[in-house]
Image (tube, rainbow, N blue to C red):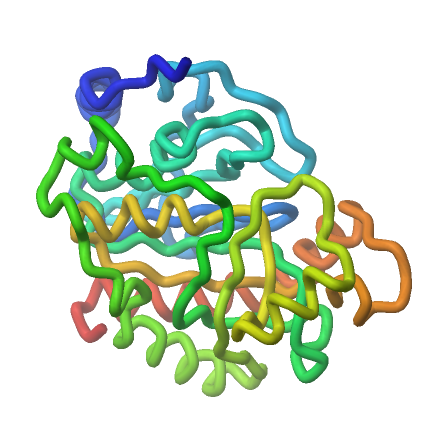
Length: 280
């Protein structure tokens, strides 16, 4: 039985705010598998282990560093979560959603998630960055069930523009200005941890998926429930089963994340500049 409650999360937010001068938070960012995020031009003010932040057991996972980094520049602050929680690790939907909910309680108006995914579309090659415009939740869970849905209004949040159109447009524009290609598409969120079968990949393609992964959708639902603007940048680390023509491994996910570090850093640095300036 999951004993993680909204009161426990609110206490975690109070303790974090009391222990760390966050300034005016401009955004919260989350690093996916194998992805490292740093705020160039900002000062690293604190690195806090997840075990000191969240009131539940933290499970180790290759390619994730379970810490939250506070970055400061003048009176502004950023939160970078260096790894996330996944349902396949045994976390509940409520625990998976603890990261955006904590960020929202601390005052972040923007939630920028990154993740690793498999490409369902042969026109989106491995190594591509994909700006997600919508998702399909096939994880069989939702972070608003029960107490957490009643915790904040509305009980039935609209998800028509779950992924902020202005942030998506800015990401596409800034990537083009930086000289590298990005795609736009739909993220199919599945449970995992086994990779999809070729038949499942074909089904996901037919229902409109562009990339497939095992994370993020619970976070997006929770972030939107709190009124945060959401952007998801998905790194297609590999071609999905039946498209790649070979077995899939987690190591190639890690390797692709490291290879894309420069492009992600450039895009996020420019995007954060516009967010702080209030132009997007």
